[in-house]
Image (cartoon, rainbow over all chains, first blue to last red):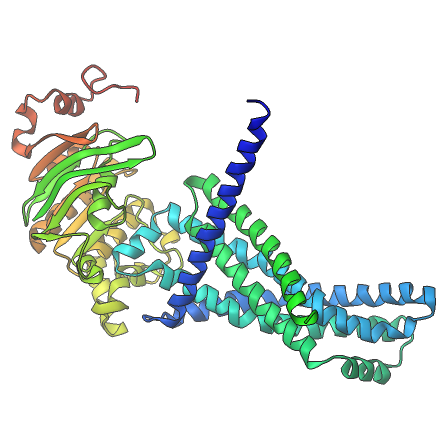
Length: 260
Length: 248
């Protein structure tokens, strides 16, 4: 019996994971279907666009500029080991646009937006505001979930694009100010080296990560348990799940875009 | 008329409703009493479709509550939640006029605001409250805003979930009188859940005592004190001795 206990635990864990995966998939499908079906709530969408997009700009900008600057320093130092310091503009550009831009923006959005959505919706559930919405003939999936998911799908690719540009600008500033690169040559190398596929993959990752971040926040918020502990647990679980799924999706999308 | 027939609901091993039977005639005020955790709110939420019963039937004016146009069904109801359940992000007037700003009952914004202010006045709140956020109001004011929201669209049926919980006796009296006035004035069918016996006497035409998942006693409020039902008597007197276990 003692030997079988770990197998039982493993089985229960697997079933729980599969059950959660199924529930999240159904929730995401319902959320996306409600984006296209009336009634629509433009005011809620505008508020979500502001909260998820505009108000995330400072965090995204600061993350990108410091990452781009650090990347330039690392590549310069690493490249010096085999006389390849000159590749700083190319590697900063490709590193920011293909990987660091979308992933870091995605993770910052998971930290800032997913947590906020989960906490807000979970609090609404605990205080019966979700029930109140239903009694007022308003579908919470349409009023709360669809606008947030749509706003994330629209704004996160834009944030990723802005993050890419700011990250490259951070690398440029460090390279020109500290490492002695020629400004015009740095910019020319960056532009010449980047391909359309790099930019498209970056923005597509942004849309996918935005969708994951919003769906996880909404799912765990709507699924919250009772009381302050329920809200706390929903918030924690939403950020953990969003961060892991963003990293897993990044791996899959990188394979799709660059291994084919 | 609202009719509940053998309604059952369990959450895991916890059998909350074990066959609840209740009839609320049209235009009357029914108050459900019972200890904490006896399933009063669950019964109410089953009628609204917020919780799906495991078994039994719920009829509203002869129609099965679980079928038909859901929006049209819910448009007939108003509900005052225990904690108010006001939307934090919206000012008071938009909370009150929520149903009038969207959906099938949508009105122009100015008209909806006027109705909201009129309903706020009806529950004893001044118009300057309209533009405040719910968090800026006291508990009693939040209850009154919740009450204004419940009656904003002039529903045929109004539910009140613990309308006086957490309020001082004076504010409880104000809320009880308001509920009674509104129900009489609107001719609405009302269902109230409460532990507060002063609320029962102020609001009820009929009373039902829920215990152990079933209605133990029901009848006119005038017969409540002479019912002879041991459960009801213990609840009214608040005695620790009797068929209802004090430790649950």
